[in-house]
Image (cartoon, rainbow, N blue to C red; front, side, top):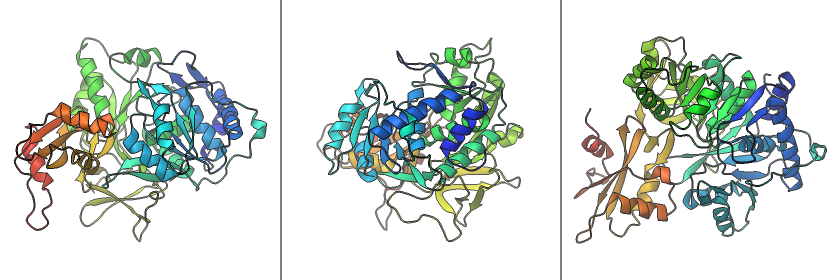
Amino acid sequence: MDGGTLWHLVADRAARSPDAPALLQADPAPGDDRALTFGALRTRAERLAAGLHERGVRPGSRVVWQLPTDIRTVLLSLALARLGAVQSPLLPLHRDHETAQVLRRTEADLFLTPGTWRGFDHTAMARRLAARLPRPPAVLDTSGPLPDADPAVLPPPPDDAEAVRWIYWTSGTTAGPRGVLHCDRSLLAAGTDLGRALRLTPSDVGSMAFPYAHVAGADYTVMLLRYGIPAVLFAHFALPGALDAYRRHRVTVAGGGTAFYSLFLTAQRRQPDRPLLPDLRLLAGGGAPKPPGLYHAVVSELGCALTHGYALTEAPMVTMGDPHDSHDHLATTDGRPPEGMTVKISADGEVLLRGPAVCRGYLGEPDPFDADGFLPTGDLGHLTPTGHLVITGRLKDIIIRKGENISAQEVEELLHRHPDIADAAVIGLPDAARGERVCAVVEQPPGVRPVTLDALCAHLLAQGLARHKLPEQLEVVAALPRGVTLGKVLKPELRARFAPPK
């Protein structure tokens, strides 16, 4: 199963184990699938591809989709992969502000929405935004019956694994999101390496409690196909409600990041006399710092291993802890890179990457790679004598909350539109449960009413900011600290001033 495209991997796995379970839905909507085998996954995805082909989707068509973590989303994504479309997943929590930028910058031909999901009408937003574009994309509400047709109408599957067919979005140092360009080869390399690092076995059952539109969705799907194991999908993850599905399907590998570790640990502490998840052997994830104390508490109290890694949208698998590593390595490092991934530390301590899982650049931006083909990450770190990576900070002004990147500048620009705010700085502060929390530090002009956190958040929501980017802490200061030369806000001073006591 080496090489090839994502669709080749789908077809190969369906031929090898057609009757083995592939996807298990923890919380299916009425009428939706509860489970799908690898054979059915291929058959359904190919018929769906034919239905989309009849609606005009062709190789190279640009399709933005904003869908939850469920079986029909996986089917739609694989159908687009069968067609050779360029797909741009977008988290369902994004609203007008971010979605409009993505539709414009991708020059989308089609926008797939989940209809009304969790109380928000995505289709109405899609049509409203599409109408403002010079070349509006078609809008398809996927909450009803999905397109279905005879696969005989389809062209041959794509065979170029190096072609850019994925545009994922991440917050950069600029206010707007950055489109990260991936090909099938980069995603296949990441998913294959992830499964190897987790030491998967045929008896494992995985889980996807994170947004499928995140690059980890494709990463994890590749892992399932490569190793032939199933995963439980959660359209909405919350504890203790989700625990029944974990137990019912006997999940052995779970996680997603630091916030998930903390949630499981908290739930275990509510019932210390019995195991929370008896079949769980491993929690694994990344995306935010992992305090050593949290590692030791999870291993001791949940009774499972914990492996944490370093990854980013630009490279979904960089390093990962090995279940066979020592407790010290697992607690204090972010693991080692797999074969083929080269991690280099620059003279100023920045982490640089080169390898097959690294993206192909950014949409509409110059080539980001240095003369030796390394991608600068903006993250600071060092390598130990054993080759383990330790991430120590970031050069770029990004807040990582629950594994999601938030551009401080994006939030600041919207805060500056508030009539009662003279200036604002947004910082990330350490948070045991979230990794970091968003803190807004503001100056107010003389004579205005004191601003409140609720009013600030209401203003940001009205501007179209996604709810997960809202500040959770507000500090009002007489004057923001600034450097003498350029007058730049000194954010390290703010972080030191408002950080929680250790």
